[in-house]
Length: 240
Image (cartoon, rainbow, N blue to C red):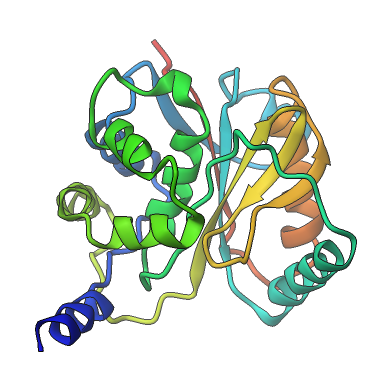
């Protein structure tokens, strides 16, 4: 009947992976309703002098990394520890599950923007999505996102802007985006494929970039030295 057809077409919906190219991502967030004063910048490495080049304040950090047995094992053990010991989650934190195959770029960016309401323009897609999803749990938010056609259009326009030839929609993408934000004195890693946000300990808006990058270095880059596909972007003020 109608319902099974609708869910079959949802299951088939594959979003193009957003590349971690700030030009493309910045077009995309403008389309979503971010204020033009803020944009994503490349972070060229985790050394202090490279971090010093990134425009401050940094509101969120997004990492694109290859999914490997090593990165999965690191995260699984962290989740197991959290499940055993519990963790504090700020009630101000926005978290959404990812149920669409390739939507991780979108979800990573949604996590960055939704947790920094200061940079949202007065109206736009993201503002209305946050209002509609305020009382929903992370799974219900994913459902709402999956049914959203407006965001699809945004995504297609930005993905077609990209430098990488847009891949066939069913191409197996083994890169994944996660987002780091600071809320109420703690840094969180937000990844829609994980059961919950991960509280990574104390942080502050002033040290978010350093804290996120030292975490990324320890848990992702150094843990998996054979991999080269790491890209880091920081959300900060637009360079005039």
